[in-house]
Image 1 (tube, rainbow, N blue to C red):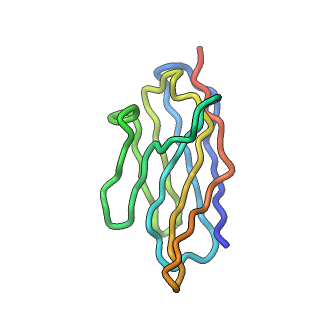
Image 2 (image 1 turned 90 degrees about the horizontal axis):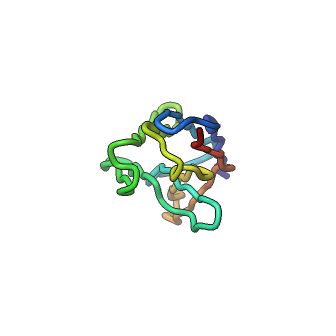
Length: 120
């Protein structure tokens, strides 16, 4: 089993910054990607950013130039640096890890979610 623990959410004023962290524990045979999703009230969960192993990061258009994803593979941790936050970024942010086991079955794990509120 793979477990993800998130931290770093909170309340920030428009234009401010936050950094989210997500650490994975458990047995991962082959890591495919690490990323972040978010879900605002009344809306569907959407992909914010994803960082595939050996590939380049993907960003949703709404966060390009403001958010940066990074990975520390030694610590099995993924970070999301969020700058120039605006009220439209208010949501619960979920960490996601996708991996394969030794039989090539693919799995997703999700963090518990952390609230990010952008408000003056």
